[in-house]
Length: 330
View 1 (cartoon, rainbow, N blue to C red):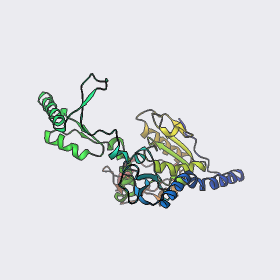
View 2: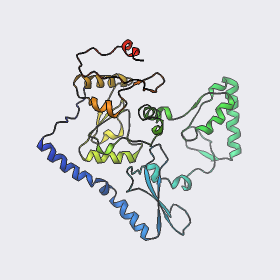
View 3: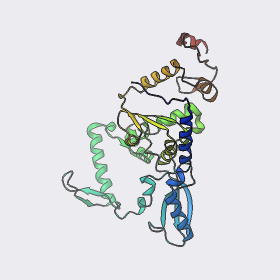
View 4: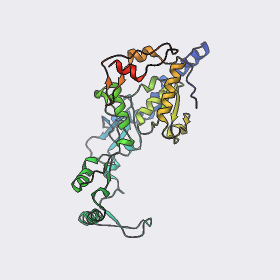
């Protein structure tokens, strides 16, 4: 499998074409949010106040505006949610758009429902909280007596701390969060590359707006709409987006490219990519050495080794350093 990298050479035709694309892209954010900006201005004239906030329904922390009709009771009719036109990461996915319905939707569940028919029939009846907790507790107790404490597993997103109150008193270690399949990889990478000050999700995003080639390896942009909006500015300038993923991610339903990599071969792919860049001399070694911590080794505990600098061989005809020669540098 080969990946066709962007040709960084520049011709007069490409320069003129790129300038035109850049001019069009410069106005892209205002065009995208022009309708929202008009609605916000109209509501302000009608007595609505504007409250810039960050959406916390995922780790992206996109910028949104909460508009409230002053002097009126808070309800779904007097509060509206918009993407923030003045925010660099303007987010407005289904989560923030439906924020008001989380606490006041007419169809939301207000009491526990117990299934009274066969599974799949959709027949339920309302029961009290005492009835629900007592029945669930009795079933958990029965399972523990039959199969032991470790048969109980809890999993959650935002309520992982609360679910520990069930598993740990029972003696079960099986409290599973969403991090391993969500943000843990990104947070660890930020830790190693930028340090702990930038390790949290949403604290540091790539410069999507000015990139020319984006390689998404197991990464989907649909979960952070604000970052996707910023990326679309670069795409309007002609940036190329390639997704490396066993499954087809949502971004590739548009004009992005999809490489269906075999599961479990990500490390081999990246190693081959690095080797090809060194072999063809397309890696910017000066930037890696001076502008990143790529010139440092990573110790077994995941921390960068700062005690010495690894000189990258410019002459690829020289044999690469062996593990033994690198260990002598310690």
